[in-house]
Length: 272
Image (tube, rainbow, N blue to C red):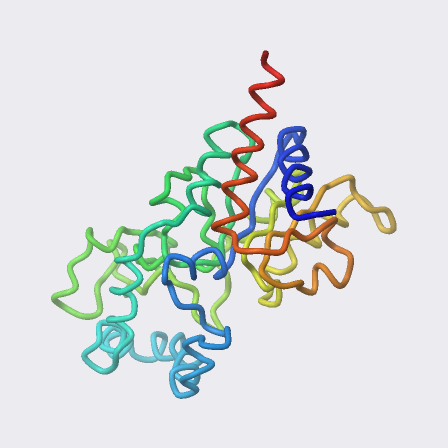
């Protein structure tokens, strides 16, 4: 099938679904000039020292929350500047297309690996941020989340109302996915009948388990009737392993708006 035929098929599958969700990764945000980490020009690909520090960041917070915050805010490094750059990013047509599909009542939830908050900026309301958000702080003791602007960073480390030190909501290496996000994401994967996978390499776990969970949850041997559609620049393990039904190869910022437009046309035609 041609790309245009696959786009029409995806739109039809979405409109006919009862409960569709989207899983998104770095590929949907690179078109908003948000750098990825492991691409050919990714932050960690080009700076192995930064990658090594990233693996130690969670341990640093547990040992010395003040030192963690000094590093994150830039007084001991440059990571705070990186977060500030991400906050300047604006959604691209791919983000807006998913928000439009939600407004049409077709897409029920977005589960994203991205920490940039661009889905919410674009207007998506039901968003599960699997790896957290740069716009929030989280308490490991009581689980509370606070918007960054609600918390004073004049005295480090910032404290939760329960008295524990706060950290960025971002999930660092060696840190568990927050239980509420993990359970919410798995519930969506088990509930849906269509998964739209957008801009993710599908190699980072446990996030990469979600499409497989959707595909195989019905029984020990049988497949579910869940439709799994990839929109990715390149094939992924989901493509090669036959987890996805089909791949629309291309940029999410170009393909997703076409899917949303075709979905709108199909919906309007059905109403006439």
